[in-house]
Amino acid sequence: MMATTNIRTQTLDLYRRHVSQGAALIAEQAGAGVEVRSEGSRVWDDQGRRYLDCGGYGVFLLGHRHPDVVAAVHAQLDRNPLATRALLTSELATAAARLARTAPEGLEHVYFANTGAEAVETGLKLARAAGRRRVIAMGNGFHGKTLGALSVTDRPSLQRPFRPLLPEVTMVPYGDPAALARALASDGGRACVLVEPVQGEGGVRIPPDGYLAEVAELCGQAEAFLIVDEIQTGLGRLGGTWWACQKEGVTPDLLLTGKSLGGGCVPVSAVIGTRQAFRPLDRNPRLHSSTFAGSPLAMAAVLATLETIERERLVERAEQVGAKLMAGFAEMSGSGWPVQEIRGRGLLIGIEMRTPAQAGALTASLLENGLITAPPLGDDSVVRMTPPAILSDDEVDEVVHALHQSMGQVAASAG
Ligand SMILES: Cc1ncc(COP(=O)(O)O)c(C=O)c1O
Image (cartoon, rainbow, N blue to C red; front, side, top):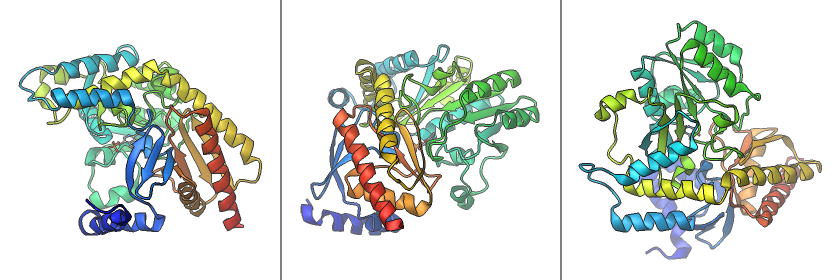
């Protein structure tokens, strides 16, 4: 065991030698400690410093180590964590039925995977199996870093070293139904359309109200295959409904989820789809599979997560907590914050600063003041918060206070 006082130095050294020199450098420059423990909305580092976690890239909607999820995972670990797959897995069947119950009517088939990008790959394959080879994806969108997911992600700097990527991908401006209509018109209806309800990695970009419904309508008219990527927005994160597409009465061919699905304890993602979209896998389940997909351990986490979200009314709480945070920010921001805009839906919040340097300084200052956030992968001017829905009123005040303090520090150093 490493002595606690040396753990950071030793971890940095091991990163440099065995993980990534770049990752070590970034952590060193940010003064990041080593994460050693977590519980609820809190995380502790090796120096015993306690943080309020509003980061985690959208994974911790239930906070860390929710006791019901931990108990279910423990029990499954003691019973049968990974299945042989020679026999049936009842946990998989139960979790699939439970997840489908939360989704728009008509989405009843589920394929579980391990990561968001894997769910995207599955979606792209099912679209192809349905005869849709061309993908229309959105400018500034993010769907992951495996080759297929990267091909439909609008990040040239991440794509460049890996070209050629998937062919027949068209990007259209996000939030612009007319542009989508033009792209669909040039397609003869053989397209797959991929869209996020709010672009999380894109800097918390919120489209005009009714956009998703218009996208669905256009897809319906063109007989295009619609995939809604709710890996970041789903399971109630945007507040009010389980899925953002339910806010606009949209039923896509496929709905993608991940991140919070494992309750912050186990990595798991899923594709929820119509019977028609899943027909290729009905006919031949070997067409698409993965060794660890749908493991009993992950399924126990999924089931406990869904039940916890329902029992603790986290979908409603996400809306309430998000509204309280935004009200607190609005009240404080009058006092000269160097901010361009603060925008959000539920518990997906973006704080856009005037420059990337200010956003970097704000992230660092917030960490210093005990608040963890996550920079979006696609907009360096934005500091993103994805707080847990279990935040208490005192913790909401703590977030507002930390932001106020840090905004003051950023303003002082800029001025
Ligand atoms: C909307 C969206 N899709 C897909 C992904 C990829 O998920 P993962 O990092 O688990 O592969 C992300 C990750 O941030 C995401 O936000």
